[in-house]
Length: 309
Image (tube, rainbow, N blue to C red; front, side, top):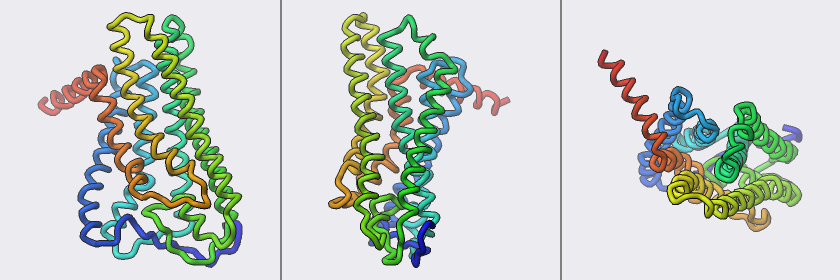
């Protein structure tokens, strides 16, 4: 670390203290995490092998699913293990690494959701130019920019964090490492660092959310000129995306736009966006998307037939 630290290991307080409740949480959250990995993994695999899912929308959906697996895996495996552990500890370096990857994948998801909204805007409002505007090289650049944006964001967060001295106490009041709970352990004033985090995390969430809302307002206005069938199909596609946006941005804005001086981490809200939302995304996209469901059936049909042979 950049400054001398007396603290090399942190104790994680966890979600609940009651052992019975912790075991119950283990029984609930382990299947949810497995469902997240399997569900999102199936979407990535299906998009990669299915010839019917070659449009930019599915290209970005596969990246979103990959981000969801990575985002959840940054926090949930350690969280689940701690539920059945007597002593919950993590090294200071491991805590900083968890913060880095957690914010990297979180912001990459924000940018991907924004790019997906832009894709829907072009598809609905500029259909004749869609294949030119959203060409394969453009899609690759937009996806790469989303990942790069997450990396840059996380590097800023970590550069702020590693400058802080930690000399005790060493109990982090959360079930995973995040910036505000860690700042409370620093033996110096963290007002400036809190403002930087507020600017870096909160404003990205707010501006991206406003951009998303603006995109869908324009889409809704343009849908008036479409046929009834065209409106139905467009709204069905957009509804899945809007649902995911609300589920992700709601907790993020609630947590990261609160002033650091009065911040009290809501662990249950954190559980929602680290455990529940990543699991729901593949369900939301497959239930409302006939093309994905058909591609999944074809994929499984091939596997079953090859197994029989």
